[in-house]
Length: 179
Image 1 (cartoon, one colour):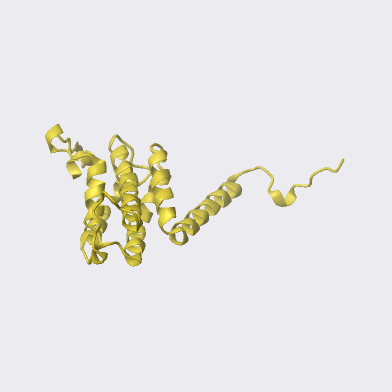
Image 2 (spheres, one colour):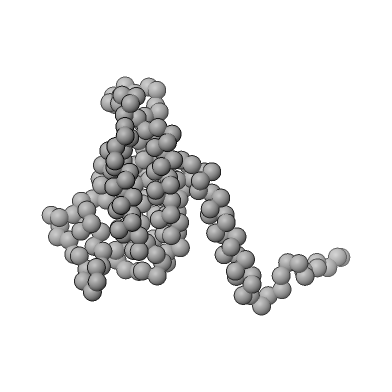
């Protein structure tokens, strides 16, 4: 899977041949399918994100960015899809998983905590903001109390830092004229 992301390592880029690559949506679906029921899949996902964390930073740009940001979007979308299918009551044609294999509330919280830092970093990339925004939206649907306050704090800090550097008058000194 790492070969299909074409991550630059040192001065080389790991170029994948066509037969060595896996479609990113498929990988996202497989990872999400292995979660739950006490699986260690989430720990392996954390390890993966730790290994490739530096590639998510906005200062690292290149062709590889599309793949890693798309991976976040597809992973979160697959998680949403699985939750939707498990919560559906009228499954006629679909497999009904046992209750013990379904995702729990703790699984959802753990997933959001695992992925959210990388999604926040990806939002500030110079390219591929659409996929980053899709991943953020999916996380916000899962656990808004974990995601929204952080992005609001970052936005306020960003606006405050721009205001401190700006020579424009602040809103405190603005007095509208009355007609």
